[in-house]
Length: 436
Image 1 (cartoon, rainbow, N blue to C red):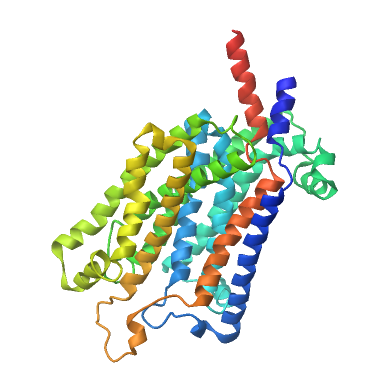
Image 2: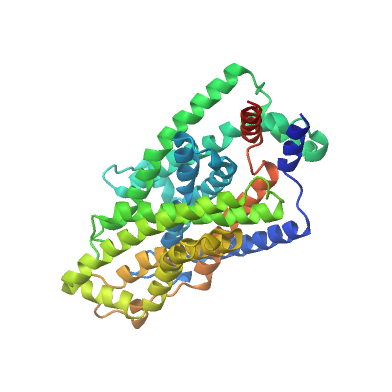
């Protein structure tokens, strides 16, 4: 019992220290700047952006694809690991669930931002067109959002019962919140069985939904007749990239939470080593789809795609393209092949590289293609031949990224980062095995 109390005390959410308060303040400030930029966009219209007739999907859609991609981590770490019985993944499941929920929330928000007039979103429901991939995207994103929320909530119920025992530590406001969320949970055997069954159903459900959301998102591009998007490889290409960036995001969060909350005993060197191996596998898979995506059109070099490929591989977008490939795929593979590269600090750096490289990769999926339409640009202003986001676009995009990190930060303050009850159960099993 003494060990149990020690584990509970170690894993209870704590109040922000000075560094945490500064971090929350910075994220809040960036988010507020983004809100102000969005106010300007609402007031003056999309003219405040640098999107025009050709580049009508700018940094907003790049951000949307990035958020959708990183949200896949919820199904990778939570669903796949749970169904496969991967016990070492237990300390990582809630981190993955928090990232998934935050990402899918801002994926939804950034789509509304991109519409210009938010009331247009209402038209999707009063004038739906089922033959439109945009409608499919709305349906699967909404479904994925609710499943992700439930997949975060159900495993929390046993932990909420534990949190209710520590009213003095959590404070009256959080105590009321915990009571609202889980006062009905008594911890009976019947409730555990029902909860386990519900979690298994959600894990089974979220995997095809997650694959669907990334496939449908890829179809938004692939069903648009443009050089670079006219590909049957896009669905698998998007899913492979999403698995990679999602795992990279978890690695970054693992390191930060471990460092800031002194969780070295629970998020161990072995977890980093195993996640490093997972990252290598996912990076190799994504590298394969990248080669497959670009090698075939490069070999054919059809006139319609020649300008796009040259601009991407050796033209104005080449520095960003090779930076994204080297930083987000090649270098992580090289580093993680060595055991020393799978230590916490190198893994943290590699995780950042993967996430940053993934963001630029999404930007490259959107912008170069739109600047190379099948019908060449004629008799248009010179500015239409180029695209660089306005400060409002940058502010809104950075504000959305900061907002997602703020949600993850606040969730980690409200709920245990590592599942307490599952950790206790595994500790009991290990102790019993040692005593046999």
